[in-house]
Image 1: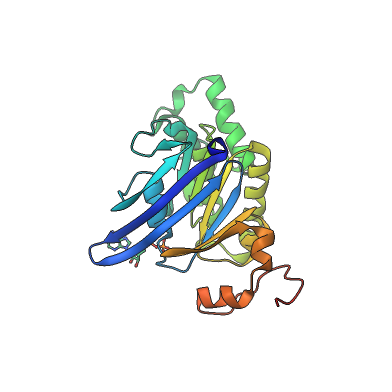
Image 2: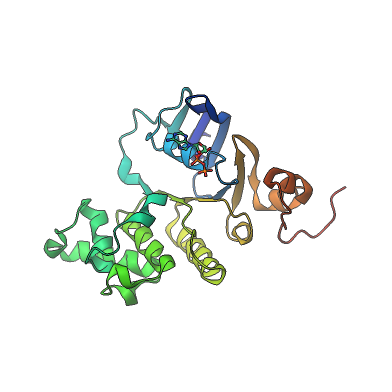
Length: 255
Ligand code: ADP
């Protein structure tokens, strides 16, 4: 049933000049799933996300968002995106966490003084859902990298998207904070009934928080639910990654 698919990528190929980055990528991302999209650095993850969002035009293939061809799609309020570039947001800019989140309602700074009570509530709700309401009045530059990521996610959440895409949100975040970050995403996914796509080069602990895993390296090497992922041979995954991968909760040896 096409109505149950949030994103459909159909035989998509992409190259920068001579460099093939994506080859015949076909995948369906189910509505309501929490997908971990993993692959080593340079495997084409960001490029695929940009094609999905219509920010890059593939030389071949098609993307459908909620059943609509991406070039015809115009319901962008349904989609929240936190790019890797969010990291380079000028955090020296004198804005509080609350102000940064309110930017998600208007797309620019300076209007936060004119927020209606209903808008203020949306900002507070978004801050609460990433467990950052206590830091609302702190300057964004005073927060840790992981806390800033939560604020950028809240900024995307404030317009109540049905689909949220996060590109490498845990880069520069320490292991312990990464686990609590994934826990926060899992709760967010559970509480908001939304589709969540988490892009990461780090397969590790992520797999115990998501519902589905897709492994990309130019092509889709694996796509299934976490149970199927755990059952897939860790040797196969290690070959995919070029180094040993510990597949969590791997109870039985593969035949
Ligand atoms: P990932 O997100 O998995 O790290 P990317 O999609 O960013 O991978 O990049 C895939 C490949 O394409 C890499 O080899 C990268 O160097 C190359 N690449 C990315 N952006 C460009 C660009 N604008 N021009 C040329 N090559 C690029």
